[in-house]
Image 1 (tube, rainbow, N blue to C red):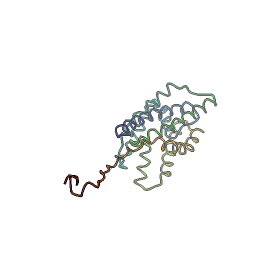
Image 2 (tube, helix red, strand yellow):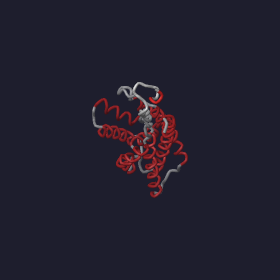
Image 3 (cartoon, helix red, strand yellow):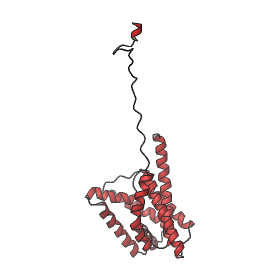
Image 4 (cartoon, rainbow, N blue to C red):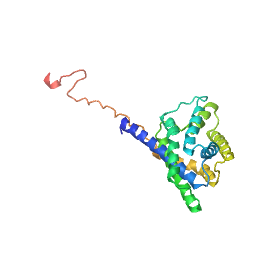
Amino acid sequence: MSRSLILVRRIAQLLVGLFLYGIAISLMVQAGIGVAPWEVLTQGLAKVTGIDFGLMTNIIGAGVLLLWIPIRQRPGLGTVANVLLIGPSAQLGLWIFPRQHILGFQLLSFAAGFVLLSVATGLYIGARMGPGPRDGLMTGIHARTGRKLWMIRTAIEATVLLIGWALGGNFGPGTVAFALLIGPMVSITIPRLRVPDPAPPAPVTPDPVTPDLVAGETVPRAEL
C-alpha cells in the first residue's frame, strides 16, 4: 500500500475510533453500574458544575493536555482530535441511548460499551497519530521520572476515581470490571488494528552482464 493510502487510512481510522470511543462511553454511562475512573471524575464534575457530560469530557481532556507542558510532551494530531471529538460523540450517545434500570439490560449495555471501547481504542491508537491526553500524561511522567508505567497509571486513576466518587460520580461493579479487563482486551485489539508501515521500495536489480560485453566496453564484441 502506498504512503498516501496509508495516510488516508490512518486519518480515517483515527476519526472513526474516536467517534466510537465516545459512543462506547455513553453506553457504559447509561448502564448505570459504574464507569471507568476518568468517567467517574467527569460525572462528578458534571454534577457539581451543571455542565453537560460531553463538554466536561472536553474540558478535562484540555486540562490534562496542559499538564503535558511541565513534562515536555508534544501532542500529535491524534492528541488534539482526542480532546475535541470524544466529548461530542459521548454526548450524542447519551441523547440516543436511554438510561437502563433493569439488571439484564444494564449488563448488556455495559458489555456492549466495553467491547466497543476496546475496539475503538485499538482503532485510534493503531492509527499512530499521537496518544490521548491521559495516556500521554502517563507515558510522559514515566519518561521524566523513570517510575514503572503500572505504578503511574494506578496512582493517576486511583486519584481521579476518588475525586470523582467524592463529587458524586458513579463508582460501581462496572468500574472494577473495567479496571480488571481493559488491559487484556486492548492487548488484543491494538496489535490487530495497527496501521502497517509503508512497504519499502523494491531494490533496483542491475542488468546482468552478458558474455558479449567486456568490462568498460559499450559495443558488443561481435561488432569489433
